Length: 348
Image 1 (cartoon, rainbow, N blue to C red):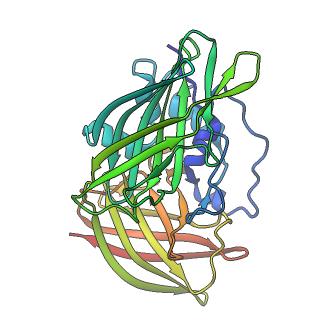
Image 2 (cartoon, rainbow, N blue to C red):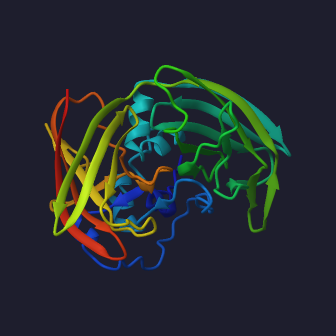
Image 3 (tube, helix red, strand yellow):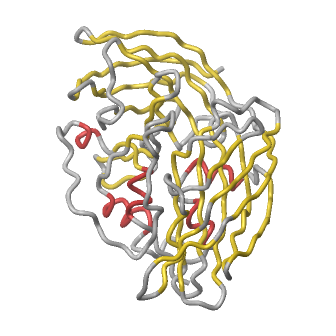
């Protein structure tokens, strides 16, 4: 079975590259690297409370190293191939956390299946499968403004989507994917979430033809929320007259987050916020090594509804103990401001 991974999938998930990439101003995105994969085309709409920042960098290098030119996942399933590109999702998968769903609906000869759901204090994650019957067409994304289904809680509040990826098997046209939503505003340790998952349809790309939308689809699901660890800080470090405050660190099985604010107005659309965590044998950047001097970390940065800047690390330090150091290499406030701002915190 051949597996194809899209460059856009990885560019959405790459938060920052090695320090020398963060040091360039402005970033040079260059031409897109073409692959045979697919990725939902729409990104977060501007009226959502979280504004996603992404850095489209070094995608070809990362794909070549992480996937070994398409051969690294030859012995595993298509779903495992998708999940392995996100260390947080992979950790959840290995521990068999979350709830099995296997809920399917058929519209216009296309079967959409919600396979599994997981929730903790940081994330809600859904894995799904799209399978066309008979016609030679492939999944081209969900027919929504964000490229992901709408997920709402029991109060009708929408969970912001901030990451999504999928892969398609060119032999069977089967597509599997993962959807990641922000759970901060709705998740409470130990409680269950009742969620509605809806989409007006899925786009299906005919071979050599146009795209048609098949749907709608609607599911109701329930999932327990796994507890996280919150390390309150409220520490401020000032460098060159600019103060950066670390409010708290929140670690869960799927992700570690740090919450920041600064004495200058940080711009949500600039890619200059760069950070990493080290300590006790842990380095958030050590997930993909492209050379002895270059490390790449996985995660995202966005602005929370209360105005805090959130930096996520898919290589979670959940379950680890000891002293750790958060280093903010740079921030953006109309231009790149270089630190570093360094904070030490202890996970008891």
